[in-house]
Amino acid sequence: MSKIFILGIESSCDDTSISIVDENRKVVAFDTVNQTAIHKVFGGVIPEIAARNHIAWIFPLLDKVFKQSNLSKEDISAIAVTTHPGLVGSLLVGVSVAKGLALGWQKPLISVNHLDGHIYSAFLETKNLPENPYLALIVSGGHTSLIEIENNKKTILGETMDDAAGEAFDKVAKMAKIGYPGGPIIDKMAQQGNPKNYKLPFLLKNNNKYKNEIIFSFSGIKTAVRTILEKEENPNLNDLMASFQNRVIELIERKLKLAFSLKKYKALVVAGGVSANSELRKVVTKIANKEKIELFLPQLKYCQDNGAMIACAGLEPFAKKDFTTLDADVSPTTRIKR
Ligand code: KG4
Ligand code: ZN
Image (cartoon, rainbow, N blue to C red; front, side, top):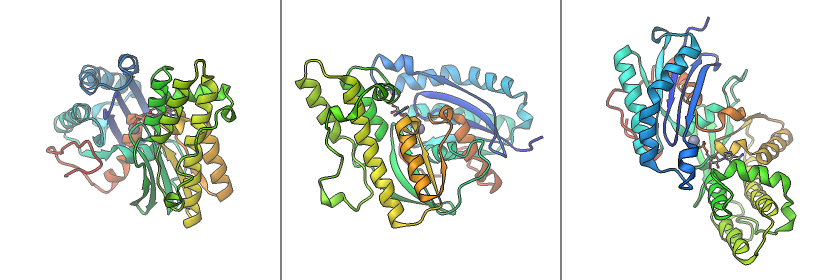
């Protein structure tokens, strides 16, 4: 029987998600309430609506997760919660609930950075943790970052100059009127399309300035897609989406290869919503095989925002007694006062 059980709470955007994870990174219980159907009509997340739904659903969800776990509050070792980055109104719901539980149950509270959470999503239910130093690529709706990690020290090697990868998928899908969120829809359409039928520009390729820099940019390709959508009466959307996805992944592939050419890393982690992309999963598997290193990819159910990754990220601070206080703040950015 496990001795440590971390309760993880995630509410940084539009998913209300709660999970209990044990010290072996095994998910004991897990559930998410998803608001996609509500925000779909607006073509994006409306922060106030997201926050109000979190407040309506979080306690019934907590109840459900506890029933699933067969545990009681006495079994919980600590409460881990996303405090940043995210939508402030959404974060406040999860953090307020976590503080209330910590106070009422007299349990330690752990503040988790959402991006660390995504990295830990790739370690859920795995046998090992990555060897150091390793590379972590976070590709989500809000972030695109390549990070070097060595003994918990994180160095950001490169970020996006403009849109995040997932944001580009969502915006292109909106322009093409194919639905929301764009990532999974484009992924499916691209499987039916031929990327060679539309020759969209390669990203950051013709500019020598960026050749040897780890940097991402996804906003330019939107214009190229828009131009085709405006010019052609009946564009082949499967082909166009295949070409768009191809260019986005080609840039990610090129920059990953650049990072590996600069330093020998012992493992690669790819996480965040876009890590669910079937083509990206193939490309990073190939890179890891070529580099002869271990690849950590989250299971598909843990690619999107979830409480399990937050609980998992709480295990190490729990072991080190790195707790936060009941006056903990939230933050829309990766910087936070503690
Ligand atoms: O990590 P996540 O759930 O939320 C953020 O923290 O942003 O990521 C959501 C993003 C959305 O932009 C969505 O379109 C994208 O992940 N996404 C995908 C796929 N599934 C979700 N992008 C590409 N291919 C997919 N299969
Ligand atoms: Zn996320």
